[in-house]
Image 1 (tube, rainbow, N blue to C red):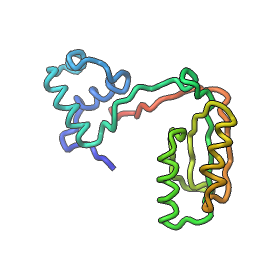
Image 2: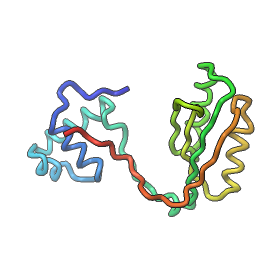
Image 3: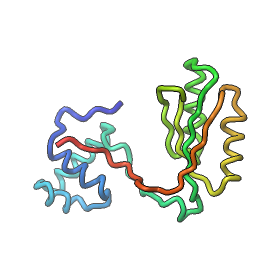
Length: 159
């Protein structure tokens, strides 16, 4: 798991706060906001990318705008929790484009998946592939989102 660099400081936190709101903010404007030069901001961003603090830069797409209006949460319980079978499930879920997020969790379920699909027919086909087609899935429970109330990937920062 990535760890903040030893020189992680309040400037880095301020830069991250700006980037989490809008990662297209010019480095000159970030520098003005945090009282650093644009080259200093650039060096700090590059260091945070190299150390894994910044895991990626992406556009957040509205699923309905691209024909994927249904969000589904799925609890998956495996037959066996042998390490190699858990790793196989992790790889299988991670490789599926419709699986937006996958969490290996404690409790009754082994995984929680967040899935987007065009329609329930697409979800049924996915269940056949991921769950019914696997000898290691004991059961799964589906929860269909009725409304997207809050969506975000912003991580709360100290300070």
